Length: 192
Image (cartoon, rainbow, N blue to C red; front, side):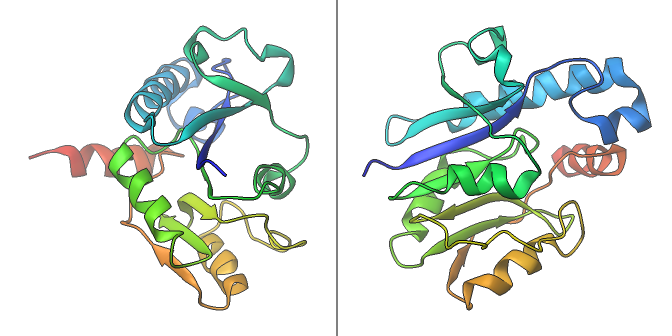
């Protein structure tokens, strides 16, 4: 099967995306930053070597968000992050998921992740906050694989890795921009 990259994205609606960042800097600035992050990620990861599909929410905006034009789109299933990711990893073949919070990710990172899946059943891109900016598998995920994961926690990646039996490839550590602390860290790392 053809490699597929799913990008999990929320519509850039004031007060609905980047809520933790909005608590620190306000909803107007958070929306502006989110749109900038999303545009950069979408631009940097698209590549003809794999299919790029946006898994979007809310579903009723499927095909109606200008920021998403030119991309294949599917609706996210409802529920917490566990069932939403499980639905994306239900297919056979090399499958990756990323969000729109990590502007450092490039097509080189995505290519490295797909290469990692040639020798390991799982691949992760660690985030500096203890989570991950990328997860991948040859799919489908075993039933219950994402149960009992502490999401948005400094042990999120550890929780998921523990379910792999140590059989995974790992990419470079990047910064997910979820709050003001992460935004400052990203800006600091971007300085020469």
